[in-house]
Length: 442
Image (cartoon, rainbow, N blue to C red; front, side, top):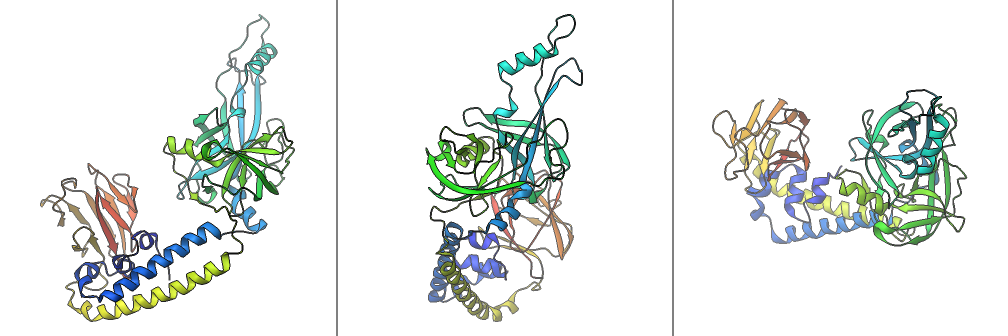
């Protein structure tokens, strides 16, 4: 039995349960016929379940050292920065390496977080390179912006470019141009982190010259304790007792015991301990640039002692909720025979009115016009004349936005026009600001 996100996000209401069961049209048509105590019980139980789930996210989720490593190591990458002179002489270049980590929205990796300093040469460095590369006539070459490459999965090199950066925070965001993978994205912790506890640093051996960063060597995965946090929110700086003794460790992610990134390694501080910029600064820069990422909110209490009772509470709550659902379904089973359409016919339920739109053929067009559509959506001027098209067979349907004026979203994710997106039972479909639930009992 699975609980889709839409079930939990509907809130502690009977309509959320009914939509999860696939009886969206009955949630509107027959809600008044349900007994009040049953509705109250269902809402109370779903509310308890949500509280238990939030407690599990907040206090549970502690992983073993091996589990953390397996979860995070594929998302840590080497960043190669190359400064070149404009005289196009191959030897006139400087290659630097540092570490970074990949982030994305859960569907694909889109960006890499790394340290700001390594992407920029100081004035003294530029002057020294020019002196070294001066030609026979005493002419100094110009040095352009560096090229940035991300090396992942041991031998895959992806070209990148700086999308945004903050010199104050010491953070740069690299945008990738290809080879994107959802499995490589790492989750970012909330801005509030524990004042003490186990942390991990994942990085690579130092690389010399112009060869590939990995060779036959493995990643370095180190464990230590978080000693202190200076400042709060996006001003937080972390101090921990991991000493990588590596020149190219800058930009490496620091993890907590849930496998979430809580900071980015910057180097050794005046106390002789490692330091990192807190994840709040990274999240702020991402939010300012509207770059999507996966977020995970860890608790300040670590939570090993609370995992078992919380899990047992969730199991009990799930069993009670399932029992309540069975009672509700039993009371509605007799009324299913009154439905005009077959039980397994795919359908859209308009949330604001309870209207059921049975999809009995493909292609099936929805819009505000009576011309060229199979169903007219009335009462909303933001709906385009021909807004969306549903294609495929009745067991495998796809949603296509027909270049509508106010857009279409699937589970709150905007759709690109004229592309096909698969529909699944329980999906939220938004035509402009009008919400529909897609139901399909297979």
